[in-house]
Amino acid sequence: MMGSLKARIFRTAYRIFGRNSFSQAGEDAVLDFLLWNIGMLKPRYLELGVYSPRDGNNTYKYYLRGGKGVLVEADSSQIPAIKKERPGDTVLNIGVSFSGEKEADFYIFDEPSINTFNKEEALHREQVGSHKIVKVAKVPLKTINEIISENFSTHPDFLSIDIEGLDYEVLQTLDVVKFPIPIICAETCTFSENHIKGKDNRIEVLMKSRGYFVYADTYVNTIFVHEQWFKTVKAK
Image (cartoon, rainbow, N blue to C red):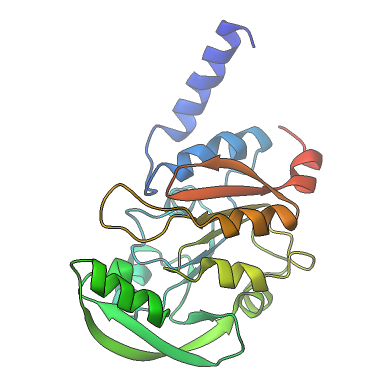
């Protein structure tokens, strides 16, 4: 691409989007490059594991732009803040099932961002980290397919999933034939309280087997794009 054309495109994108990123590691800024090129400025989104409705959030930027979606958060203490910040979104105070249960124990820490349904993961985090479990609560569950069926006419344009140790299990249950979500951002690093984090490579293997490719990786999260959609969607 010629330098002057590239510069004009950058200036136009900057005027529209600015440089603001609300994501943990700039994932929304990465996605803007794709979304701007195809004219999808207000994607419909599903966010599993919200915690904060704004900071460190992968969908808040699109909400500010007029996008709408469904926010799923199991921690009831976070729900009032989410509803206040995101009144235009549908907010569900539930967890996500992957094996048929209708409710499950939710392990709540003194640092809410690491809460999890995974008992083994909760005990591991308590053992190796500096935070402690303060409560275990029963929380109702729905499958990801139920959530999509009940809240979208077809399927979301963008799925953001960060459910602390159970991303792989839930993604395994996603019916990608019925719900071929174009863009999926999943947490693919393992728990660590410092910058050195292992990667859960199972998620990448799974997504590639389902017809997705890695569009970008921020070390913390991986952005997967549906290959058939990517090849057929028209640039604007």
